[in-house]
Length: 168
Ligand code: GTP
Ligand code: MG
Image (cartoon, rainbow, N blue to C red; front, side, top):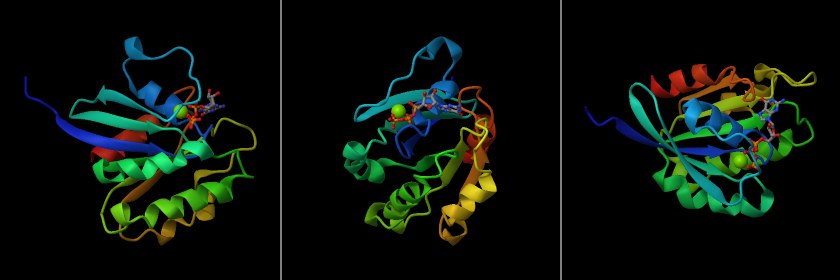
């Protein structure tokens, strides 16, 4: 058959936000890992949709590994940025990392699409995607297409909406 168009995606966000859980859910069920452990460094994952073939750089969000992110910015054609909507204490840290990303020379002047997942929406004290969007000041992103979806990566809810947006 025809070879699908390949897209490199960077999956970024703080540790414990749910990046690996999200990527795992997007894979076919026979390729899904059963237990998910904190990512060390990064991991390269692949999955296909009906139209595209995705290569995802699933980066560790731990502080000591965040300096790895920028080495992959040039290769990224889209970004998935994951936020733990229940982690109110670290929302300011997530915003700092997002602002650093947006100001990076390899990102700043590119119209690279950014998909935000306001993840862990199932938790009782989770903030709404609107509130997360306000706290991260997403309305200030004017030079890149962006979209935010509430998600529950454990149950796989909200993920397809996000991938559909990325593919559109
Ligand atoms: P690092 O690799 O350390 O950067 O973390 P990560 O962003 O890849 O997070 P990971 O996918 O490892 O998930 C961290 C924890 O959050 C795991 O225990 C997941 O089961 C849990 N988790 C992920 N998504 C959700 C969600 O939507 N709801 C709930 N309740 N838990 C979630
Ligand atoms: Mg991970």
